Image (spheres, helix red, strand yellow):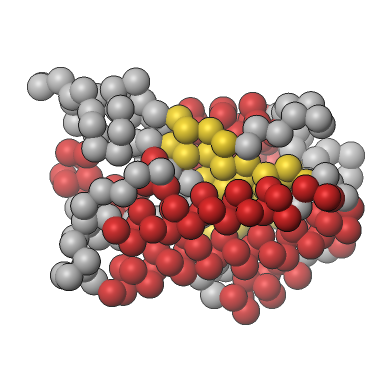
Length: 255
């Protein structure tokens, strides 16, 4: 294939979805992964009918090591020549102090945000090493820079993403592989809806009184990062809404 190949985890919504759309517009071939098969197929058909790109979808649960390995290794050899890995799949579950939080929420966050990222990066980085080229982008969070009450485990997983990415940057340096971390502040996606288990009213309150980032804002940042010249690596980006100064400080206007 002459066009570059990008693999996006968690491509069925939010940042992953918008990134798939933007990269398709810019002539990337795509491997889209996620747990919601119907959404994956709908996105594939839409992009292929609109843009000059080829797309493969992989429907699997990134939390499961064996399932992840089987899905990735099922790719045809020409599709294993992945130029860009975007570790986007992630979630927050619950908002409670450590003494009363749901342990199942902890498991979901650790398995998705940390272990899933590692399972995917381990396989694809080995393919990149063989070719002596590639770029791994991991979506972190302001929660990877600061910790806040009732979010101890989510913050812990995003701190882990930051640490893992910094180590990978050094580990993969001899092979010419780029590594980037992008840490957004408040982004209006399904993030809060998932955190609050589908409670739309509670999720809407998170973004009330200010203009949050959009998923497209982060997709455009990713496009900027992957289109830098070969000698340029954007190691780390923290991107925030103008109205957000820290994980908990906002300039919210009353409505």
